Image (cartoon, rainbow, N blue to C red; front, top):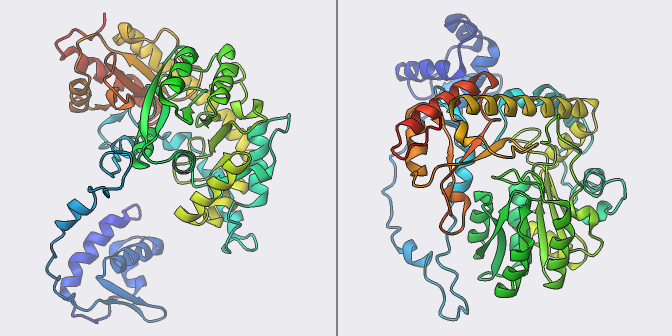
Length: 488
């Protein structure tokens, strides 16, 4: 075993060696393991930690590592069948039938699942490692660890400095927001969960764009809400239909993504921005603005419009912002902005659910966004996303010209591909995986029957060099589908 051997390989080797030791017997010293397996001391330390976590060894500072005592026989499993009734039966006094009380994680897990290494990932929901500022993140984490009080309990609403940064980032130069209007959250998904649970009562309707982000639908249903679709087009949500939906349902919440909408990439047209706010205000409703893609504008895009929250003095908009997409899946730090009693409700729900966002993460986020490396990274990310979008569109033009979108989005990291009528999109997605490329079927993005078959194609999750090959594999999968989706 050489210096480049993985911790996993060493763990497997040591696990096999443990059979030769009696319970409580000491293992060779770390130096001996380094020499025998030709690995670094760090690798030995991590392997022993992994075995300790499995309960196979115990470590004693200054004494070494020992084989753990024999495990006790596993207890017989009890009968948990009673839970099926307990988790589905509503009390007889329930005024509204909200359906089974269950959380369906499929829409969220689809963005988190990592396909095998041999599969080109055109369906993932997070940018590839090469698009992350890993050196800047490491530096920020190290500096945060040296800050006084980093491991102390933070203020419930979040660190004042971080709340102030988010207020400036969301409110813009006009200064519509200040730190008092901000609640730090554990990323955008947590922010959406808090917003919907705080603003809508179980059993009530919530208006959503159609199509929309499947994770939003999962959040709404887990909160006992009824998602009601409002169609959108290339210019964003249809505001005429939004007014009709408010009137028909008496909903008090509308959730939208005005910038680089997921999955369509649409940007809410200037003429519709005021209409959304006016329509919600007339209905006495909130607009939950999911601004997940604010830092994902491409280098050749025009300056994006300000958030709806920046044009809202009356607290109609509850804004959700996160650093996760532009930084790292593990930097789960975001913010909610709101005004009035709504902010107090949001804060109460978050405190009950999770107490607060861990202070080390908040301190790391502060170090990151306050460093020159953050602006440098955002410029590099904008250029890389532009180049990836261009490469994928060129590959689609050569391999599947019928699927090239009419208006490719100038931001975000995905394309919404309309398939020919009659195409079984689920079969295409399954066939694509067999051909070595992962894509997302369109149906989970709709709350009702989809009006047409679609695929959502991400160009951020895979390595840049893999993108043309991924499109070629997709063409082969589509060519195998009978309705003639191969395009050309």
